Image 1: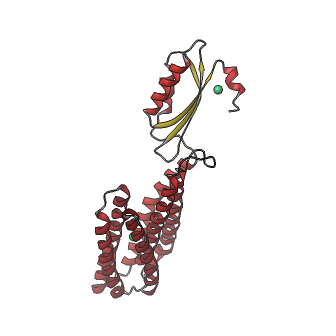
Image 2: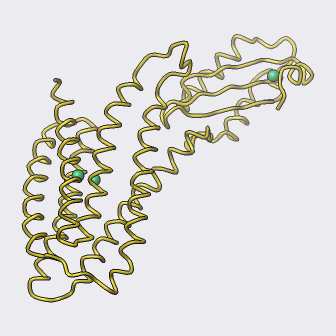
Image 3: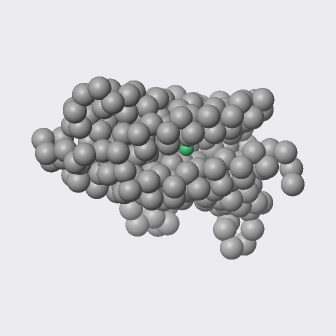
Length: 285
Ligand SMILES: [Zn+2]
Ligand SMILES: [Zn+2]
Ligand SMILES: [Zn+2]
């Protein structure tokens, strides 16, 4: 196995087994905070596993089945993972907010030992992954550090519970963790949803581009301007221009292609019409 995929695989297995252990011990120790961590780790495992697999698919070359390429498969991974996290954390917030006012008695000796163990293992994993410098490995390192922070909070609460009976701290921490998960996953979900729904790329000022094209020699009007993004990075555009008779078509198209390329539009199709009638003839918009 390639070294890079080995760390990904390790991170996947670690997060998944953690999630299962946390689910079991969360119930055993009556700790909502540990259960919230279970959801987080399950989401991490899904994100790591699914995106590793679908990212591989997404690099496949365009073919006759997917004529626009496979890049959207990474969007699918992000959408599925974000949906799981949103559902899980919303459920936890609904479930645990009332418990803040009527907290169950947490087995704090249990969560104390569990937290120490988790910090040690996550710390070791972060150290292993940290050696890599790819974007993916940096994200993985961040995940492990974030997990450690969650566990440090669990540890602190378990220590406090040693001396006090502030059992509300555990559901409170659970709700805090859930809100954190939600704050990360909701924007991610919405972003990727917009890409799925073919929204015009955020970083493109279509109005400015249209104006710029309409100042070019021979261009009468931009009658149609479609722009969408495959994955947030690679944009595609389709334009129809109403041009004047005698225009140097080759020069004009070349000018426009260069302009679009400068705006991260990797692929574009330009249709030239000599009258608005001609345009109406091939469009039903
Ligand atoms: Zn994790
Ligand atoms: Zn994480
Ligand atoms: Zn047209």
